[in-house]
Length: 512
Image 1: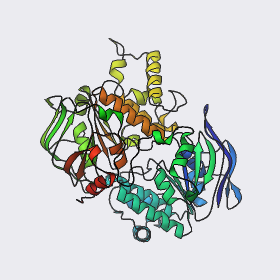
Image 2: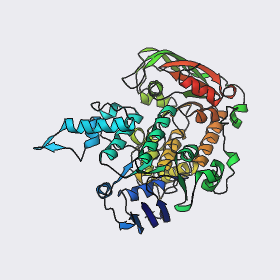
Image 3: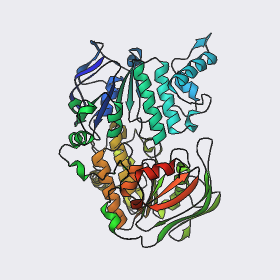
Image 4: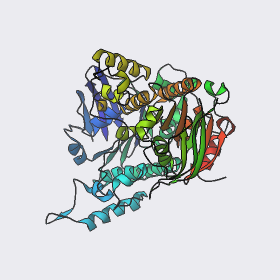
């Protein structure tokens, strides 16, 4: 169906892909896995015409093709759903889907025809997209469905998916994989890039492993285990070193920092908080919680149950309509974001690419945001180039960010390395409390392990964390306590070591 032969692509001195050869069969779900920076996203961009290879060729139905643009690839029946969704938030869902292929009569958009076709696709594939709603107001799953519908509307034969489940909740992931099966039954081809090995093993017919831009081989899931795939990805690291959880409901592995005893004192308190909410996101309803010094508190929630509202209310991005918020024995309910930051309160949003980073600006500028005052010289406020370079290189080395230089634009990094940079920035300096939404998004096995270890070291030093996630394993791998947010209410908090994966999963669904 579609094949890559000895494809190479280089960015400056970094090889993203080097001599990659992969063949994908018609009607196949083909998984591609690898560590951050292995070249997975670059490969999809070459297949979809967003980038051109420096060497090698693409074969479609046995014939060489060359895509100079995404339009060329779309005409050949190839569509890409990006890791960072490419939608226009001000336009409606329907307008985003048909953009560029609008059915027209006498120069006017034929909305009824477009709506009818989109409605048919939604019915066939089980989507529930409000076509008249502004795309920017929809939750991540709804916006992702818009991008998929855009490709299906163009009748693509090959659908490329880059980290499609990174911000989906467990029920949404199950629906998504049912959608992939329906695509396969129609004879369409899917190329699936993901760091979640268990999901790829379950969904894919074959799996190719990339490491440092090279393809190490293609495997059939029934002939290889998750552990064997992980070993090939990390190339020599022992899989047993990764903090893991028992899939059968056993006790999660205990990270060393959780043996240090109880928190010394309360640094953050939210009392009877109410506020926020929208058609797609529950508001907080009488939420009370406390975070101790050096404590890692996990908040589990399925998308739409108020997790975004909670993070924004703590950080100051959203007002607390009722109740109060206290940090370091001070009422910060009415303080703006910058004053909370001055006190040592940091926030990492779930969608860092859109809400925390500047894709077209150089790495050093992205790192410097929020840290510019301590690094500025006195009294004039100028930056010393050598000092900035040394600080930036130290930060990137600490975060294990693979890059081509501090002057490179952020968008030149892989999605996983962009997330590492965002994490590095929020962890730098002297924070006292860090609110993190989906911190493990897009990170490979090694990077996740390094992150949990770093959070553990910082917690021992007295830094507190609130980790908000729908990934149960992420919560139980590093948190001291875990609470569940359901329909805007905090449904209790329990010690992480006393609950199982299945127990937390049921609580997140509102089951007892």
